[in-house]
Image (cartoon, rainbow, N blue to C red; front, side, top):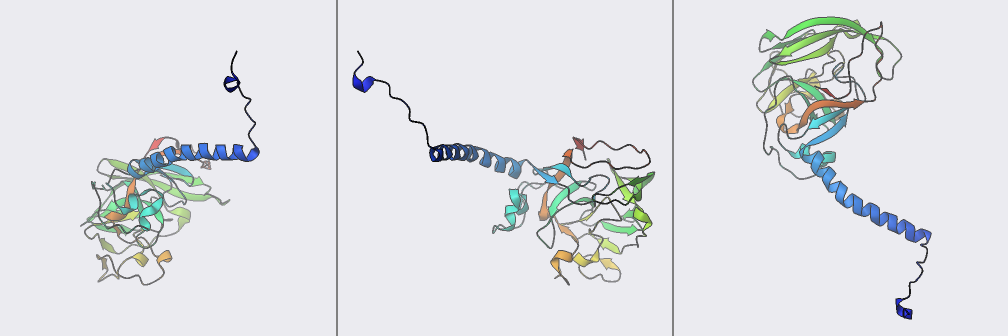
Length: 281
């Protein structure tokens, strides 16, 4: 016969508060494992960014979710996940630095504010960059380009129909597509830019709808029609300044792949839409 002390006892039902406490403990244990793994992955390998504007159309559309390679250019203060590098007393420079290349699409910290941007590199240190209209002139030579088609489409959150010309541009082994002639608005010729050491010249693929290194508001004052310096005090509000010449240490990573998108294709005239899921850049 089992003794009284060995006899089974009935389990008392948990109160509502005890159930809540138990669930919170389980969630806490899960987060204690998942959160460090997430921060390690996004800090060292890849992070996801969502495209907020049309400055990179047609390469990137509003709502595209892009995988950004953090190890492509090494690690600096702006490589930290959740933009924590803005608030930590870290120095400049990078660990395991990698050299960016012309034609790459990169994610970076705005030169003059705390915004995260995405543009294409067209100029590296020592390069001369100029735009004649919307045509790119690099080191005195026009970049190889070819007209593809005229396309009509509905921009994000608008009801008007825009019309633009699609052009391909090629630098080395990289070819991409740009939009020119948006709504027929003319683009004036730019000044001559000479990219300083440790900086880059970046532009959007939507040449008539991108606030980028072509705009003088983020640059030092030109001398004799040439802009060749960086680091001057701003003459206006930082939130209104262009990116100017972007320092290399502001790089966050290279945009490699469109993972998926919530963009809904709105091309007109029966034109085919391009694939926007798991597409390399």
